Amino acid sequence: MIKNSITGGSRVYGVMGDPVGHSFSPEIHNLIYKYIDENAVYVPFHVLPEGLKEAVKGAHSLGICGINVTLPHKKGVLKYLCGIDEATAEIGAVNTLKYTAEGYKGYNTDVVGVEYTFSAREMTLSGRSCLLLGAGGAADAICYALIRNGADKIYIANRTVFKARELKERFKGFDTEIIPIALADADGVKGIDSVFNGTTLGFEKNEGLSPVSEKLFENNEIEVCFDAIYTPWQTEFLKIGENAGAKCINGFDMLIYQAAAAEEIWFERKFNREFLYKIRNELKEIFINKEGKKK
Image 1: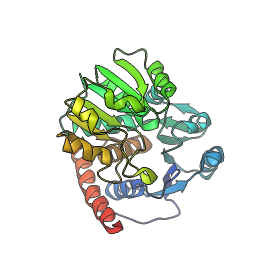
Image 2: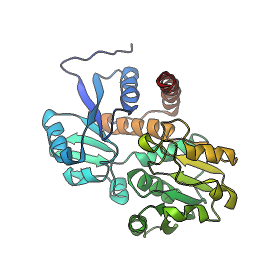
Image 3: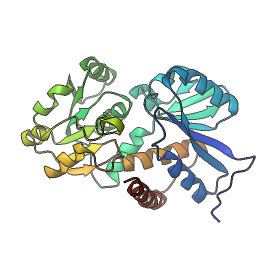
């Protein structure tokens, strides 16, 4: 029987970010709790950068069992954790915190979200020549997913090139060729077959903007456009890609699959593919209806 009640024994989980009001994560996790019959609730926490340290300390004191971390805290929160997993150490960004007696331990499930998004479509990341837009928390995870799944070459385009260089330095032990460039030069890149947007261009106050233009697609035969943004459902970047004939994927599936991976960490269990598909399809319908009511 599927339950949906909060009691004195309910475990509390949540998402921490700025902004956080747009987040679809509460719908995802609370639906999962219904189906796995857990006495738990998931809520949003609006945390400003200057209050991050106190927020993490306070959450631990309150016994909050797990926290997802979103923009702009995926890197800043690292200094307040008692430990991190291997993926987080490689990427330098965290998106999932698990309560321990000593403090929160950090994990990065964004990588799993990217990988599963592609495997669910029977698409491969191996052998790709890519343009990665951005060098922040989401871009770091995308870059790591590309590298550990065998991408041949990655151009990292960022507004401040030194951050792209830092990302290259972080992954220097891998075979993938990494080339840092300025975001302003991204349209001039040639010889790529995939583009991944890890910037916030297209989201919130930047809605309607794209980090690249049609020129990039005129210069390349691009097969895949991936945008980590999921609201709006189709960003300007994806519209440009679709018009150029590329297969376009937004960040919704990444969001669902990274959330499920976080639940697997928190509850120490594994979900099968059929369950993930069921949750994904139900949540897509909920999300599209919700977005439609806003317009």
